[in-house]
Image 1 (cartoon, rainbow, N blue to C red):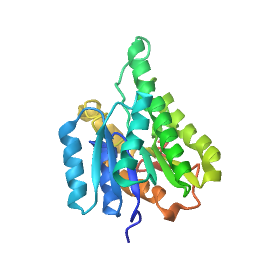
Image 2 (cartoon, helix red, strand yellow):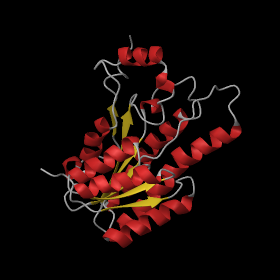
Image 3 (cartoon, rainbow, N blue to C red):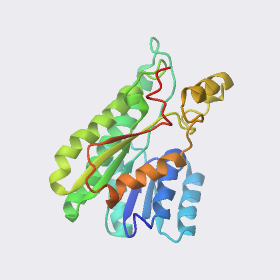
Length: 254
């Protein structure tokens, strides 16, 4: 059964990692897909090609989510191409690991602009279009386990992910009357471009694997199913929720 048959799904930060997996997962479930990406032209083109190979339509729109205008342009190009917006997956994010006491101002500001401001304006632009269309929609934001727990070298990152989690709770209230559902997924340690250098440390990687009850770190594809579920009509009465996708790491105190 294809859960997103006939829907148009927008995914930010979709040339690699979780965003790419979500975009391809949506296509596997029958959606046409519009992907946003910042820099990686080659991976973005290959993502579009992979979606088209599944028999679905796709376009890639380049843009920096830190610029509020990018959100308006992204939604406008999606509507121009496919006529509507049914689902927004706000995924784009960065995490340049750095110690707290000497954290550069520009690193903090850039992280907030991409992760939190970018999510805010993408969600707002998608919601404006969904309200205009009048038939509801689904918004899924990729938050993080870091919304709930801390990280020594993530003092700039964890507040943004807590903000994304909170944003979904508040927009669920603001948009419920329009039939728009807003939920978040909270990934644990997933092997992506964001953390590949950090997890190149074999000892740290083994420690993180040992902390995970399922005994392995996550792959981007582990997020595709949960995102597709929340985007689909199977989750028709789910809004304001946060779904941990972490292999059990959060609950493992010892």
